[in-house]
Image (cartoon, rainbow, N blue to C red; front, side):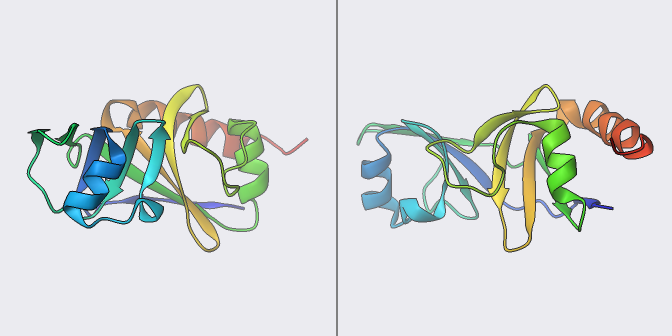
Length: 140
C-alpha cells in the first residue's frame, strides 16, 4: 500500500515566468534543477537567489511558498495509485512537470523511489478525500 505524507516544511518555491535562460544566467540557478511547468515557466525549489517581482532581463519571479503544499507519495502501491490518478508517467521525463492528477493540476517532483505532488493549498481537502476514497476501494 502506498504511503502518503504531507510535507509540513515550508521550503521556498518560486515561480519563474519569462526568459528562463536569462533567469539562470543572472541567478546562477541551473535549469536542470528546476521543475519545468511550461516553455517559459519553471518552479524553483529552494532559494531562487533573486527577489520576487519583474526583472529587466525579461522574467518575473513570484513567491509560491505559502500557496503550495507538497504531498510525498511512496511505497509498493505507488504505480497503482498513480494509474488511478493520471495517465501521465510520474517518474518519466517530459517537457512539463505540470499534469492533471485526480482532476486537479499538480506539479510533479520525481524523487529516487517516491514522487512529490505540489498542490495548491486550496485543493488539499479535495485531494485528501480523493486519496481516502481510492485507498478504501479494493484494487481491480
